[in-house]
Length: 216
View 1 (cartoon, rainbow, N blue to C red):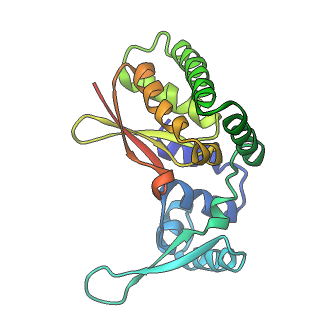
View 2: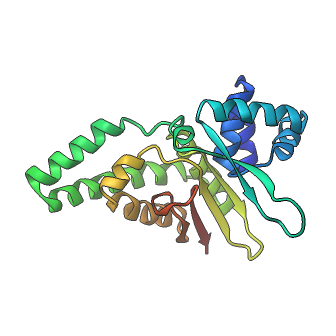
């Protein structure tokens, strides 16, 4: 599933406001005119919608200088806007992880992550059966990750490598509490795809999304 396919499927039956939030989540900062072109309406109509969302605290605008002339106005999600895309059972998950760490120790927590990694790898590898090409495997993996809440897609790069993109992290609170989840993720992808995997963007390090460069 490409990033564009993801946007189209997610936008079905959504309000204009929800579609704008989805666009900012999956594409990052946008001008009102760009949002208008994507959604098939005018830039002014989108600007009005962005202003409405800004009053709700979900988006904010920022000026970006682009050569000579007035700075261009771009819209981005605020923390409250990002929170509209939920972290799955965040409070309970963090509480359980802290209890395991304090009661059983770091080794027990690492063992738990290893068990989860092995089970996830088994499920992903089963889903790859019959997939002959790396692109087919990437499509299947992105579809699985999207069902799990990661809003995933993939793109081919000019150097013939690929980029696996995850626009959301539904376990962000857990990963923040224990970054072993993120370390395990890269290894699972590598074994699932039978390819080299390098993380190039990381939400926990302040990026808008997580992204992985993949090559044979």
